[in-house]
Image (cartoon, rainbow, N blue to C red; front, top):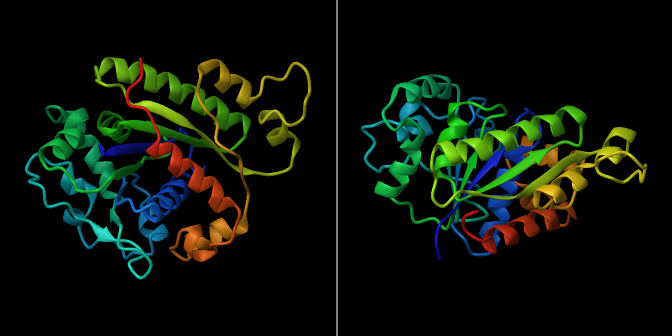
Amino acid sequence: MPQYRIAIMSNSGGVGKTTLAVNLAYQLSRMQKRVAIFGCDPNGSLTLFCGLEDPPDANNTIDYVLRQEFQGNYPLFPAWENHTQRIDACLGGLILTETSQRLVLSKRGEYLLADKLEDYPLPHDVLIFDCPGTIEQIHTVALAASTHILLTLKPEDKDIDAVAKLLNWIYETRQELRLRPKPSILGVVPNGFKDRAMHRDNLGLSKIEGIESLPDILKQLNIPMFPVIKDNAYIANAAAAGLPLGIYRPGESINEIYRKIAIAVLEANWGEA
């Protein structure tokens, strides 16, 4: 089986990227897949959500992987090892603010992660890149290394506008980097839905004429939309406990949505015209 490399992106903070990353990883592990999650965000939320300690130094983060001298000894930490032996995490943190500046000046900086993964392949079936909340150099590096892209947002006006800008950036940057094959957009995951007018309108639930909803827009772009994840205290509580929802509360119905996303990853086609 070829290795799937999934970049989870948005163009706003606090929309559930890391939540999606850890829950997707856990569901994939239940399907007997080995998964490595890469924390590409300076806020370091992956460390908390995996229940891990802060890395002692930059050599124990993804910053080390993104150096020219890196020779394959990935700083991977097992996640939830009392529950699974199939998930590892390569952590991020504040050091990534310096990493981004260095990559701009590096030869083949945009391709550095892709180059390292090609030169020193990992045995995992799926790699997940948990990207920052705004478009920056790390986004470009993750895009160049990915085979597929997942987008997540809250059904807010500003988030939908931000994702529209992100989609334009993805289309343009794939072309500029001459990526072959181009990483495919797997779909959009609406997250944090609350039963209020803006969310209902944006998801097409209000049935009001003249309002172009997110499903309408995505249909025109031929981009799938996954089932809506409702705002749920158990998701936040699980993250605070350093666990995926599937371990924290295995009977919660939202786990089925994460399972469907995991199936979509494993059934995904490669490349995009």
